[in-house]
Each structure stands twice: as C-alpha cells, then as structure tokens.
Amino acid sequence: MRERGVGALVVGVDLKTSKEALKLSETHDFLRAAVGLHPNDVPEEAFDTASFGELARNPLTLAIGECGLDYYRQEPSEAVRARQRERLEAHIRLAEEVGKPLMVHCRPTRNSMNAHRDMLEILAEHRGVRAVMHFFTGNAEMASRYLERGCFLSFPGIITFTSEYDEIVRMTPLERILSETDAPFAAPVPHRGKRNEPSYVIETVQRLAQLKEIPLERMKEHIMENVSRTFGFDF
Ligand SMILES: [Zn+2]
Image 1 (tube, rainbow, N blue to C red):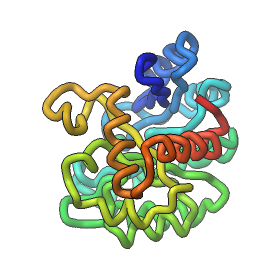
Image 2 (cartoon, rainbow, N blue to C red; image 1 turned 120 degrees about the vertical axis):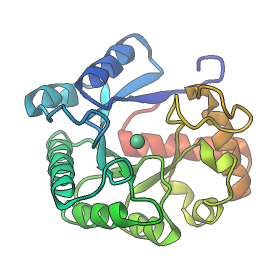
Image 3 (cartoon, rainbow, N blue to C red; image 1 turned 180 degrees about the vertical axis):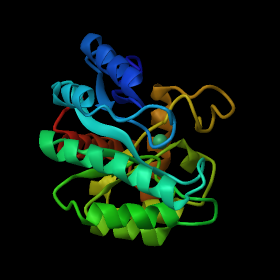
Image 4 (cartoon, protein in one colour; image 1 turned 45 degrees about the vertical axis):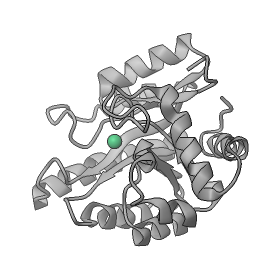
C-alpha cells in the first residue's frame, strides 16, 4: 500500500475486528477504521452499544459500519428483516450521535432489489446522516435514488471484469464516487482468483477513470476529495 500510495479504511464487521481495525490505525498513518457489526456475518453477536460507542468516538474511527441489510445470505423472513433493521438503526443512532458517516452493506435476494427498497425507506427517516453505499451493486434506479438522497456510491473491483455497472458509473457524478477493494474478496483484473489486496484499488480507479473518460490522476483527485468530504480526513 505504501509503494502504491494507497490509504484505506479498515472495516470492522464485529466488535473484535472493529477493535483490530483501530489497532492498525494507531500504527499506520495510511489506515483509519470503520467500526460496526455486519448484518449477518456473525449472527450470534448482539450489538453492544456501549463498546461500539467507545470505539465510534475514537478520533481514528472515520465511519460507522459495516452495517446494513443482507437478504442474500439470510432468507428475509419478517423476523430477520425486523432484526436486521433494528441492528441497522442502532448504527444510525450511533452515527448521528458521533457525527460520522455510515458504511452501508446492502445485499438483496438474488434478482431482487428488496434490501435496497428497505434501506432507502430507513435512510429517508434519517436525513441528517451521511451514508456510503459500500460495494454498490444495485441497479440504475436504486443508484439514482441513493444519489438523490445524498449518498456516496463506492465501486469495487468487479467493475474491472463486468460491464453490468458501466452505466451506473457513468451516471454517478464525480463528486459522489468512492472506490474500494473489499479485500480479501473479489480481486480486480488482472488479479482475479487471487487474494484481493487493498493496493489493488488502483485497478478499480483506473477503470472508473476509463468509464468517466478522464485521466487517472484526475479520477484519483476526485476520489481523495470525496474521501475528505465524506470522512473529514485526508489520507
Ligand atoms: Zn459488505
């Protein structure tokens, strides 16, 4: 990451990894933390408001999440939807309290936009909170509704090997684009099939620049400006 001039948010998915993300941020000036409890990565863990509150107030924490809705890995029965919604709302209250943005994970049931519809409904009730849609893979209609709501769309490495999101990237204003790897998952071209690394984000930014028809350097500048505006921090 140092060699390629890359900085990143290390994103916690439970209390343990959120603490680890903060620890890494203490010792690396190009890393900062996001702290939260993923909707269903660790189903047995309850959201510990006091502990997450303490982590959220740490100045090295720049965002609250991953948090969100995941109907892909868990059948969205009424009970599951209610439980995930309740957990998400706890994160939103925390984000409001500490004045930091949400890092949102939103994954619908296959061939559906159900989780996005629920997400938009929930976010509409909390206009004051900034939200980054991490690993955005919704459709164009969902993208425009998130953009209308003021959200940022974060694009992962999959845009380097599928054209499915090209139109969405083209329609997203440069002021609302962020990029990510979601390492160790979903490595971009030319690293497909390998363990994804944070430094591979360059390949994704390169593809964003191509789709936006601007030089790579300008795309990087836009992203760094967006990071600064979203998270109040300059890597
Ligand atoms: Zn996620």
